Length: 258
Ligand SMILES: CC(C)(COP(=O)(O)OP(=O)(O)OC[C@H]1O[C@@H](n2cnc3c(N)ncnc32)[C@H](O)[C@@H]1OP(=O)(O)O)[C@@H](O)C(=O)NCCC(=O)NCCS
Image 1 (tube, rainbow, N blue to C red):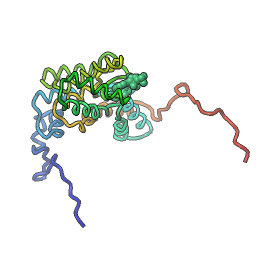
Image 2 (tube, rainbow, N blue to C red):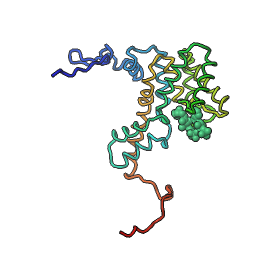
Image 3 (tube, rainbow, N blue to C red):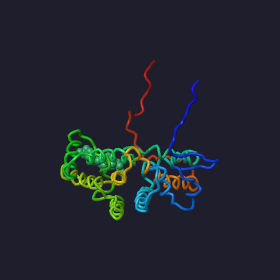
Image 4 (cartoon, helix red, strand yellow):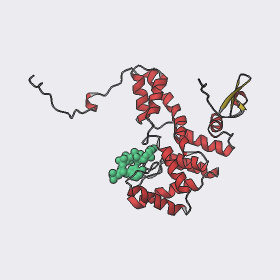
């Protein structure tokens, strides 16, 4: 029988010590920040100070967004059912889908594939928006339940990306698409935090398939905080109250005669 072999270019053990991307882990400890080492793990090289600052800005931007979002509700409800911290946090992470955090991947794919085409950003944006409208598709990374004029998190991240020279063709394309969406739909569909991260990581040279990872890393901190608060401050068994639900099925009725 052949022996199952695993391959990795991420970590190794040398003389019983862990190495990350070729660097001795203990040499990194105390010298590099969490974001810098996260960059090393994800990209394979240590970041420049500019890359580290932009990555840090993205992690901080997504750390929390209130108690009512699907991931925090799931986290707290699962813990409230009598489960430990990690189970609640895992439940929260499982809610990350296209409408919540998960659009980074698909938005980065759209930006990377469109920006790779020849042409001016404004023309590419017009064509890509028209294409999605013809297919009746929602463009990932645009629109927000609360923010109708601008997503302030995207604005802040873009300002930092500009200061550090990471506002390139992908960020410009993303903003041009937002303008086109308004022109073609008449709706204000802001470039949301997922779309902002998707554009910046694309300008930083990350593969779109890593997209959701940036949201997972940042938001998990928030989920741990919420889970811990639920565990230590709230009584178990959260449930909806009668005035929070409606029954719209058939009224009470008798069983049919046998
Ligand atoms: C985030 C989102 C769920 C917010 O939705 P919302 O503000 O409550 O808006 P609704 O889902 O009620 O949609 C309202 C209208 O805008 C349109 N719309 C919303 N987002 C759109 C998008 N990204 N692209 C195209 N049209 C969009 C809808 O089709 C709908 O049109 P209709 O009324 O003609 O059917 C929504 O904008 C979306 O699905 N965006 C794409 C996914 C995404 O980026 N998610 C990450 C969020 S941080």
